[in-house]
Image (cartoon, rainbow, N blue to C red; front, side, top):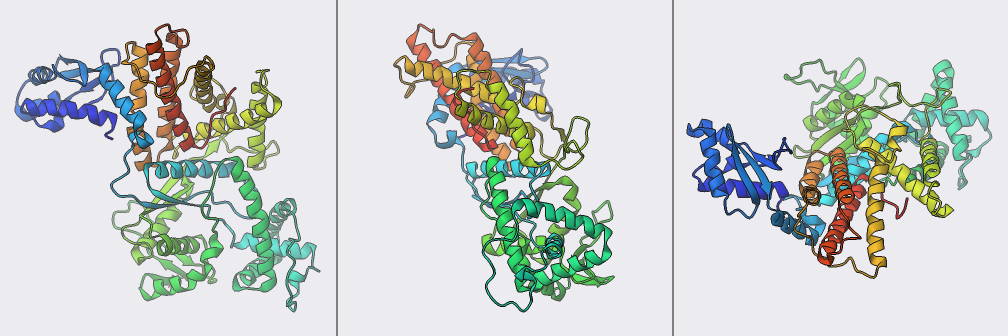
Length: 588
């Protein structure tokens, strides 16, 4: 089904063509003067230069062609040649009815359905999720849902950090504390215990302790580096410890991502591509792409068009060890072989852009990535506190994500408990849903690349451009529909009104923009477009609600039309917030 503005423009283009002008002049846009008209067309202004004719003359000719239009109720030529337009209410109703009946509200599947891999999350094992993990999880999850909605095949990968020096540090510290564990006996040939020799709490304490020692003690650091090398070369006992670390960490990570309603199709890490590295490195050498510089194996990635100096991509460090560039290249190689994707998207801190420029150019230059594969860096900005600094605990540490979620959930629970009608269990569940909406909408309503202030007071407000405001609007609609049903009437199969009042027409027009919004959000990988849409719809609905007697309307047919509009509004809002990764409660 054609997008709403596209359909409107088709009518205008036909009018230009009938009048003897280029039909492409008939592009219609939303009015920048809503006090004067709903839509506008500036084609007569552009046509004046082409046809050497006064723009107002062209505009008047177009108005003549639109006299019998089913799309426009008013078309006015205004000096010096603008076309001010108002839509025929019956046209708006017809379009919405078609949307209502169509699968996915008429959103068309792209001409080419793509396979897209989204790399988001990026946590390290043995470390708890903290506030820095919030943005990649929320943004990546939303992009995944949007791309799937329009019809693409999408694979979400958490991309765990599970193979570098942190693992060697943990093994070294564990050996310091528990030297008698059989994992450290190289002569041991039996089976290792199934139960790990540590809890998640112990593991999360071991890593920062070991990391701190490495910064102060060179001998300890050398042992950690050796442990890392021994792990990666296959030492049995270390591999067994590593598997325990993975099991304990991933179980905890999944629990916390579940609280965020974030889900991954793949739980792969750097270790999963380790066996691809030797062959990949050899191919880079044989192909003449990689060479040694100061002992390190590097690939030149600078291009003539670069305005800044771009350092080479280091494929192997001077000691022969792999690094993030190595594992990222091997991961691209793996994804190409397994999925042959049309695009690989990386939702990562924008400060990592140089790294990904180097990796992408190396992958393209060497053929690790096919020429047709789009490698896209979706860099997100930082989430700061009110004073502009990174969010930390009171003692200056990094704030754990689960503590932040609990804090917001508790705050929402206190607000929701003001509604004495809600039972305890429902109040807690409602608080959870509203808290998640507050966090996710607060983040996603900003363009991903921009830094933003995490203003908890604003995000949890039930007024303004916030998640709770949206949910409150949806709960209001649910309440009206429930009361209508309780009166013994059905909400099924009702027909929309031809809108008579301005607020009703404006709400219907906002709803009609769903298809264009989804297409733009998918192409631009832009969840903030969905946020802007739902906020506009919520505002339009509340204007309609405050100016319309819905349940007390005496004209039954008109009331049915109102109920049909509310039902469609709720469906569209529910579909939209599902793309953002949260849902509305039944009551608040």
